[in-house]
Amino acid sequence: MRRRNVNAALIVAALSLAWGVGSALAEMARYDVDRDHSAIEFRVTHMVVSKTTGRFMEYSGFVEMDPEALTVKTIEATIKTASITTNHEKRDAHLKGPDFFNVEKFPTMSYKLKSYKKVGEGYQAVGELTLLGVTKEITLTGTFNGVAKDPWGNTRAGFSAEGKLNRKDFGMNWSKTLDSGGLVVGDEVFIKLDIECIKAK
Image 1 (cartoon, rainbow, N blue to C red):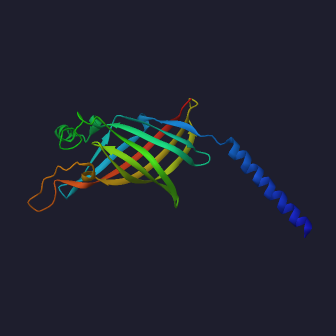
Image 2 (spheres, helix red, strand yellow; image 1 turned 45 degrees about the vertical axis):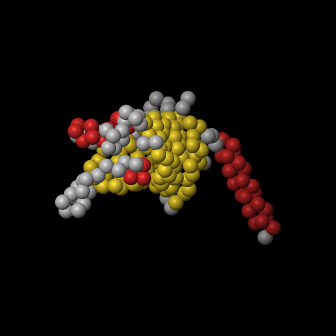
């Protein structure tokens, strides 16, 4: 019996040592968003019967994290509002105008992480989105997709996340009512993110 207790103690000590080494090797580092392999998309109801999808083409951001320990210190992003596209020139011009993003007065919107927690197999992140000069909290639910080395020696990390917001919370109030009673543009906007980052050298 005593020998078993000694063996158990040795196993526990070995695991503790291994964890200590892993923690010592853990590294908090900056990962910059790779726009060529990322997407910031949104979807909103159009005239009740369909969804209009769009995306932003110009943005920058970074994540400070330790992917080995699955800990994140900071997430920040800045998006150029004039880079919005819905693959429809006239609609895009309207979205860039005062009724929606008002890009001349507000050329960027920004996001900054406040907190996050693990939920099931994924994560829930609460951050502050500043749009049209208004800052509100939004919640994103997503997954960390892992880390890999690319053929050029870069360390890459990937995330996917989804969330929603009410555009009127940010003062984006333009709307028209259909004869049937519905709205031309819905108030609720769904967000979808697929982000790939490269570890800064």
